[in-house]
Length: 297
Length: 297
Image 1 (spheres, rainbow over the protein chains, first blue to last red):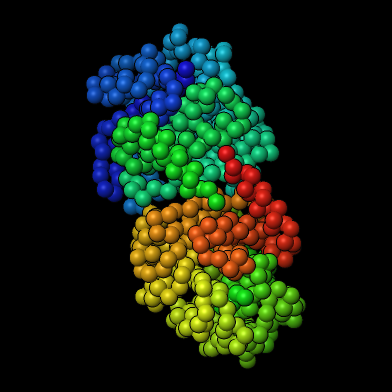
Image 2: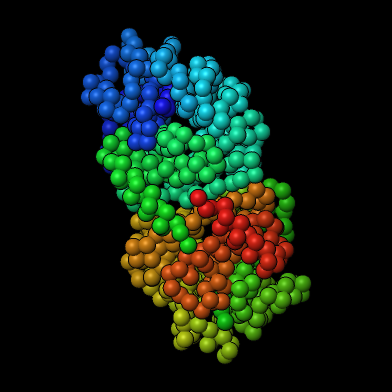
């Protein structure tokens, strides 16, 4: 199985075409729903007593929720607004709420997970979390601007503890203080992780391993309505694909980034998690085939 | 043969690592040198009496210069400065000089060109130019922000007159007033051109034809020193490859964008035109093979 540790949130998302109020969101939500198309996924997250039943039901449909703690207090809330081009987002408000003092608990049956994804949590918490798993075959973490600017050293320490780092291009530049993405990746690998995957939004991704670079073009999508969670869906798909194959060779990891691009492309086609909820496994298969065909020359 | 019509300039380029003063530049220079690796290329351009002999010699090594007019006055000059990330450039000064009243002349032996590339010239001048060729099998034009903001209607009219439009992502958004690149391309095709190629710098390109989209990842380059002319080298390589193959089917045009990406990647590795001058045909072959290998999954 795959364990995903990260945030489950109530998001307010302001897009040019629609404003969503307190909808199901969070890095672990997107990553977990995305990975659930490939493998049995267990969630470790904390929510408040105000968490709507209908969202609990969505999570329960896709994920093992033994690691979901319902805490006294309110659910983590995020409020952000996209510009008219949908290419940049500003944060209007972040309320940590129950996440402020959240102590994640790893259910006994998750401990045998060979695959672990640590979403953009506090790096110290991710470092503590990875120690809870003693049969890990492949682990991956993400991070965000907030941790880079407040706990850069801890983020670097976290990178050493995982097999792979998946990170946005802008955040890769920020933490490495480099501008060239190859230089960014080399620096992150020098810090001690084996694989680096730089996410470039609509432009696809770059996978790095030793001297190998695997660039992949993004899946072109015309009807983009809400980019929220696309990067998390990308990471979840990668982990889901790898966990399903139970292989960690380079060819498998390369292929996992294609599934990442494809699941990210579904995510942006719906508001909130709708883009992921609307699809079936056969849709994924179809789009991967289409992507393979369209990029062939 | 291929005819390239566009500017030959003396550029002042300020990069974070080096300032180049009055070096050989211009859209037609980059496009023509790039295409010359694939096909016999004729240049139509105007320079002033101050144009240095050493640069004339470089042009003469790569291009047929029967269409190069040496006018009374000074050569077109451009002065621009990159930011420290090399991802954005501001224009400090543009001196049209001899280009202000330049009347390009098409040499008799160019008139039979089946392949014509119209660089980012005045759209009205490009429209007049294309009429000079009556055996055109494939024509392509580029444009820039300056013409979009001053002569948008003429640019659109120019697009109707060519088989393909090659354009930067930001300029595609500007002229179409769309943000999504698929929407941009559809609008440009609706205006009457068959192929649209959107250049995305380091992120590669998107080729559009009818319902087909061909995304290609950029060639990852670590030692980028000067992005000047990369887009022109891209376009030149496309035209050079197509002219060499003498075919205009979709497979050929798809493949030409790979050569575009590869020649753009050489261009950024040297200052000014040096990136193109340093290479041999065998280097192009090697990098295309490497690119094909690295993007395979």
